[in-house]
Image (tube, rainbow, N blue to C red; front, side, top):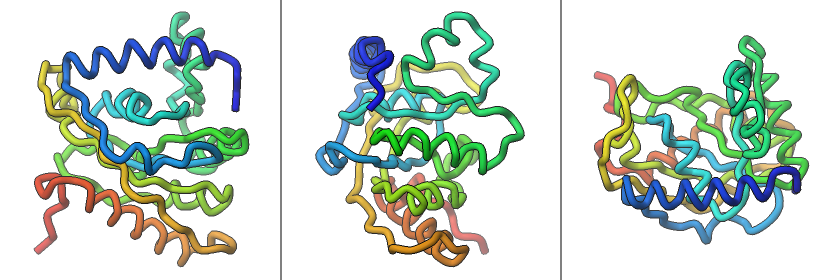
Length: 213
């Protein structure tokens, strides 16, 4: 595990947990299902700016995320984000750049958070998953733990500012057992569908995607 910045991470996590509990009533279920050590991918739905902070607080381990490199242009964030294990990713680098960044983190035995939808949902429902999380897991041997973030879309809706809405919670599911072998297209699709189904099962019905007619 990286030791650089661990003290700053712990302090920020304590502050973030206090604020999330006081302002949004954060609750966590199933955190004991996360392996205590070794590379692990936390894969969740994504509906709010709050989600990376919520996931980082909910997970008992250090969690690394990726972020656009332009946010590192601000002096305070340029100092803080590396100490929070945020990885800068250049715009236009595509999935390949994201996968390489994640692999470096996982090889250090850390937890890596990812939102397989690829962006915050604008519909209020879970959106189709991309194959990036499956590709990273199959290439690194990392365990995937599905997770559902519930209520963050009410606390900080897309395109709006934060609201004092309680009821934010995180539910972790059982780790997925992945097939051995190279990540061919069929395997990537199968693992991605399994992951999407696992996350969807953790969400209340109002977040489920409506079937097309």
